[in-house]
Amino acid sequence: MSPRQNIVLDLSTSPESSEALHGLFAATNGKGDGRIKCTITKHRIAKTAILLGVQLLLKRGPEAISKLIEKWAPVKKPGRRLGSKKTKKIKTELVLECSSTQGLLEGVDKVWRKIAGEVSHRRVTKAALVLGLDSLSKVEPGKVRLLVSKVCPVPRKYWDPELGLWL
Image (tube, rainbow, N blue to C red; front, side, top):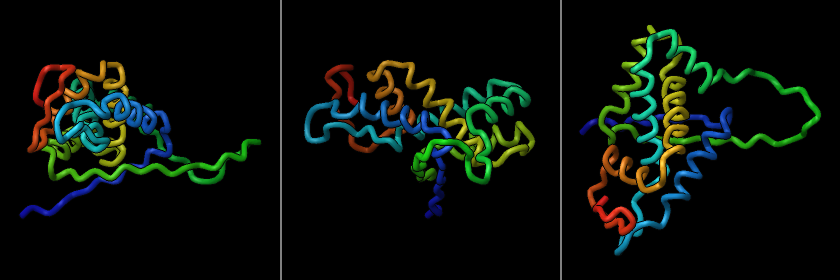
């Protein structure tokens, strides 16, 4: 039995990615017929987004990858923010079990090796997630459900009447 590997991603520095994940989940929630109304979960959407983001990053050169990682997964600066706003920061984390999806950790490792280990695996994963979520948010919900079911399959399929397919 292989050991379970989990990735904990802090989404507090990029609230737009958290909103995109919630928006994608809300757009696909409640679809399907039968006993299982929908097997699309936030974790399956996130894993699909990471795999999509990894493929988008692998198509670029090392310098372009580094720039995209700096843009999509900036380094959190220590210390307090100065300003007049007294807003309370909400910590948002996403915990992914990576042993169930084929190629998730291997793809992140390929990107990490391509940039010669300039940044951590966690930042590469976070950049891939945010880039993938941004790409998925531009696609219609039916296509997102179809893509998620192909990339992260489940043992029990459900009928999607909108697409006319078993997902």
